[in-house]
Structures are given as structure tokens and as C-alpha cells.
Image: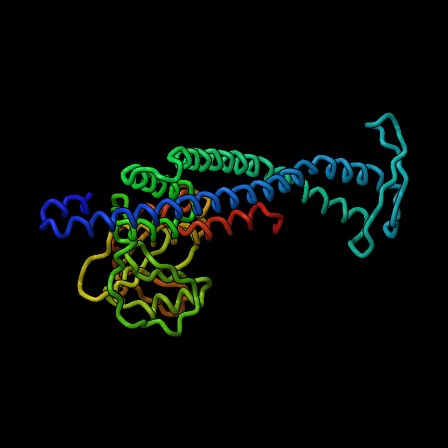
Length: 356
């Protein structure tokens, strides 16, 4: 829109170059949209295949529990060193059943206990996997809808239609936790504006030289380009809170439960601008996510100035005390739109991907 307005205010000599720029923007945006939609659909289908395998594993929980029950019911006649045993299954009309035991994995009783524990984990995961499959299918349908709209234009959609589709995709894709890095680049090249509230993603705050060269913990970048440091253990929490933090950084910690110390490094930003709301929210979401409140929809996060963070005499490693709180922010560890999707995805894989 700004591009067309400019052509009305400038001399006629500028009209042709501006029209050319618009055509180039459209030519760049269309292929990028098609490429992004294709790769996103492929990634979603790979995800569904992996989830289907998880669902199949979850369905084996009942068979595993039945095996363990049969072992426990017949322990009186199974030797601790047995590699197999033939028993009667009275839930199946007294049919003879052969039970096999893995060598080197404990006694039959220990293997039955392990099977019961695994069956419980699989049962817990089955409902979650089913919901993840439902969500993935909904995302796939959304992507296919966008793909159909793009195809309806025959590759020659009008500029305004392409820009409107790109704006919708950018807005909705982030809610669906889809990566949109390629499309944001297309937005800038196409001369269009980003969705409301996302401009800071392309205009990062100017940073001073790094003051954290010795930092080895987690580091994220806020929507305005401000570094956010997150401790991974007590040692890093103490390092972050007492040696790295300085004015005008913002220190955070989830209230009332153990968790990581988090630092929004405003000291890295040139000038004295206050932190943007999105930067504070992302830091609060991370503080809640890396805490024992990570499964809650909301968690109160305390923030403070570094000058008010102190260590009491004799306190254990990583323990600090606040002389004065700055206030609280509601962190959203479960459905945050600011925590990177790959971080949320890695956590889901860890919880429900058989690593427990």
C-alpha cells in the first residue's frame, strides 16, 4: 500500500520503476509461498508418521500389562534364573502360554515390575499422542487450504491477493507453531508490512559488544533482538545472577517453585529505552518453561533489578535473595507464542518420544 501511495506523490518519472518493483515483489513472493507450503506440508506428514509409531507403541501397553500379570501370578513356579516358563492362562480358558525372559535384565519378578512401569508410561502417553495427531491433522488441513488458494490463482495471483495471503499465513502459522523464517524474508522483499506487533522482528535493537563471552548456558533472542540468558543449573544460576547481571538488565524467576534464573540483557542495548512488552513476556515465558511450573498454563514470574539480587551468607550454590521486587508477570510455559517452536518440540519429544 505504501508503494502505491508513493507513486501518486512522486513525479511521473518514478511511476515505471515503482510498478516494476511491485511486479518483482509479486514474482518473488509467489514462489516463496509455494515452497514454504510444500516444505511445511512435508514436515507435518513426517511428524504424523512418527506420531503414528508412538500411537502403535502405546497400544502395546495392554499386551505388556497382561504379560506382566501372568508372570506375577505364576512366580511361585518360576525359578529366578529361568529364561522361559510354560504356565496356564486362566483368563484364556487355561491355555498353555510360554513366557520368555531376557537374560541379564533381572529376575522374572524384576522384569515384570519393569513391564508394569513401561505399560503405565505408555498409557499416559497414548492420550497425549492422540491429541498431537489431531492437532497435526488440523495443521495439515490449514496448509492444504492455503495451498489451494494459491493454486487457484494459477501462479498469477494479483499483488494484493498475494500480500493478503502472505499476511494471513504469517499470522496464523505462528499460532500453529510453524516456522516462518522464509516467509518473513519474503515480506520484507515484497515491500509489505508485517502483521501488527511483529515489526520488531525485523528491526532488532542495536546491541553493544557482548559482555557475556564466558557464558555457557542457554541464550535466546527476544522479538526486539535483546539477548535472554537462562541458567541450566545452580552454578549457572549463580553466575547469571551475581556476576553477569548488571543495570539495566531485568532479572526473573518463577515464583514459589524451583526453576532457572533468567536475565533480559537490556545492558546490551544502546541507549536507555525501556524493555518492550514482548521482550519481557518472552523472558517470563522462558522462566516458567524452565521451572517445575512448566506444565501449568500460567505461572507468576517475579522480576527485579540486578542491584536488588543478593546472596545471603551461608546460602547454598545458586540461592539468592531479593531486597526488593520489581513486580510480577504471568508466564505462559505451555502455549507461549514467543518460545521458539523447536524448543517446545524438543520438550514434547523428550516427554512422549520414549525417552522416559
